[in-house]
Every structure is written in structure tokens, then in C-alpha cells.
Image (cartoon, rainbow, N blue to C red; front, side):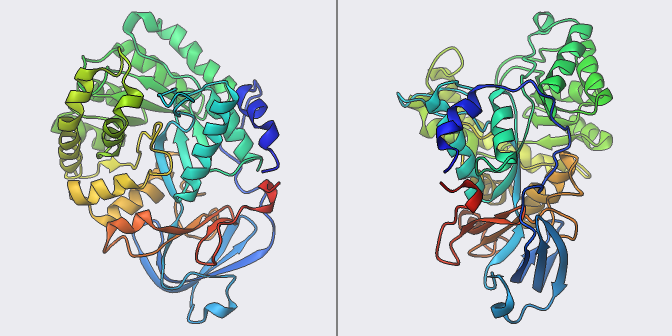
Length: 426
């Protein structure tokens, strides 16, 4: 890639320039008109269309029309595959990687190796069919986001929270200090605010007072930012009552808590098994007290069915908006679609509901429902194709053979090659 020599510099230094809070997508795409033929298309909103031609101008879809019997007149003949909008992952840690010693290096490293690893994570995620991700908890995400937006690197669009609010009660700060911290993140270029309102999956009660939660979520709302809250048990209801936007994880929430979330329109982003499986598979790489202990790993195996039972129960709550987020850390980038399989196979989620959660519903939660998450005129030309039908066989999500983001093709196994767009070639 032409930017390889510049990559460490690009990713190490966090810029202080304020970025637009609503991404300006597609500004670098070519103006060429492209026609994609599809025999089966999931539109991202729950409909299945058959025999369509998707017409793209530059970065945008300009029409979705019936009539694709002849793929010869199309630029991309995707008949025989399942075409759908590029997926969105509502919770990743895109810069989180393993270090040169093979151990967990966390996120936000400033070494050249960490920078290359972050770029690799982004590319693998894109090739897996995820054209947009929400990466939360690291300032290093900002420079990676901006490099991808400028076509210096291939990767999904990134929305990020910059620094998180860790949530340690009074040590976190007064309500006014927390409001100032929220404003500081926006000035640094954050697209949203990430906060921890409780301990981990098995540890403790809520770590922020009602006054603190109210201050954070209110200030974010005032300056046009969403709030994503790490919350278990009693912290779920507290975040909901504070008017925060999205609850992550949610394990331990009662049925009344979930009904309250549905009533208030708060999004829930649970995980269905991939995260814990990844930790278990990579135990020797993550094991490092006090956060990753023998005791915590011993509990993880039992926590997988607990998370799956929770998601099964949450899916029965009328009106509850359940997102698709994997919490992807080191070892998971490019494997994000595996949680679809857990949701359908182990939690009883309908395949179409699983697809919609990662398309139009996730787009809605990001405030981008008019730009991404659906195959519709005026939307970004984000298209992927699967070898198989995920509505009949959910493992088809592992077989992504075509990826287009903003009108640019990054993967075309159908055409016999893995493509690197000219903009990021040497």
C-alpha cells in the first residue's frame, strides 16, 4: 500500500482538530456508474427482493430496480449469491491486538507494530463484510478512523468515542467535572461517549451515581453526542433512567429493566458467545491479573450460556431494540460474523432479525439510518455477497465473497481475485 511507510506516523499521533460529528461518507469515490445484478437481495430492513439491478453512481445507490435476468450487462454479476448491505458492528475495539510477544497488548499502543496491527485489524474486518464499525475506548481509534476516511488505508468506516469514562464512583469526578470531560471528548473528535457504569460480568454493582450518570448523558445529548454505557445488573436501569442511548452487555438485567428500556427507546447491545469463546481460546495470551485471572477464566465457560439465555429472554420483550455488537478485541477482528451463528443457533433469534440488527437497526442506533444499513436509493453503496443463504443456513455469514464500500470494491472472489482499490495500492 502506498501509505505503508507513513502508517506509524499516521496512527501514533492523535490530531487535535475537531472532526465533523456526522461522517461525510463517499466523498472520495469515483463518479463511475456501476450496475450490480442480484437474484436474491436482502434490503437490510427485513425484505427479500428477487431479480434486481442495483444502480450506483459514485458512492451512492441511485436505484434498485426489478429485472436482472441477464448478468452480462452488469458490471458485477452476483446472481446465485445472497446480496445484502454491508454489516455494521456496534461495538468493537479496532486497535486492540496481541503484541510481538504474543500476549494481549490492549488497545492504543504507539509502537510501529501496534500501528500495523491496527491497520490489519481494520482490513480484516472490512473483508469479513463489515463496512462500518463503532470502536469505543481509545484515542488511537481517531487517527485510524481519519486515515480510512481519507482513503489512506482500507477499512470500515469508524465511529469512535475517544477516551472512556471509567466509572469509579467519586474518583470519576463531580457532575460538573464529568460534563467538562464529555465536552473534551467532542473537542478531540469523538463521535459518541463511552462510559462504564458497573463492574464486569460477575463483579459488583453500579459504579456511577444517579447524579453522575444524569450529568454525562445530559451533557452528551446537549452537544449532539450519543452515549454507550457498559452496564450489568442494577446499572442497566440506572443508565436507562438517565436517558443514555445504548446499553452494552446488560447481563443481570431483570424483565422489568428490559421493559423499561423498550419503553424509553434505549438500545440493547448484548453478546452471544463469540467474545467469551475468544478469551477461552486465547487464555494464555490474555492471562494477566488483576483483570484476567484464573478465576475469571474458570467462570467464562458458564457465562456463555448465561449470555445466551439473557439474549433469548431479551428477544421476547416487545419493542426492545437489540443491536449487533461483538465487543471485538484481539483475536476477533475479521471473525465478527461468528456471533450471528451464536444468535441463531444458540439463542433462537430468527435469521432475518439477526441480519436486520446488523443493518438498518444498527444504522438507526448510530443516527445514520438515512445513509447506511439498507440497499436503497440515496444510501451509501455498501454491498456484500454471501455464498449461500443466511436465512436457510446461518453459517453462510462465514462465506463473504464480495465487499463493496461506498461504491469501491475491496473483495471480489466471484470475479476470481481479491482486489485492492487503486487508491491504496503501492
